Image (cartoon, rainbow, N blue to C red):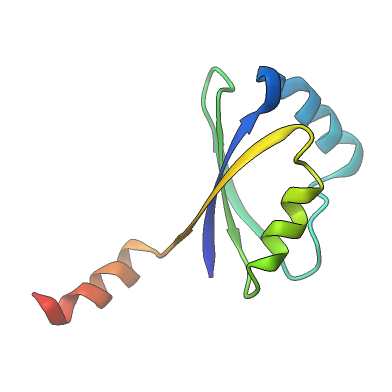
Length: 90
């Protein structure tokens, strides 16, 4: 399953997040895969695409960062998967 994770840095303090990442890495539990991420130029938000079979792994990972980051998570599918799913209804 794919998940789009939208992060907002608490207090606008992106430096604290990047500092922890430099010191500890992503701190992901086994079974959670980082796919890619994009950051707004003003560091307002980060969009991370993550993959796992167990959504609880996302919760476990977020708990390790919640002191620095506010999270919003949405399950997503690829455009190809969406097109295949909607095709019978067209």
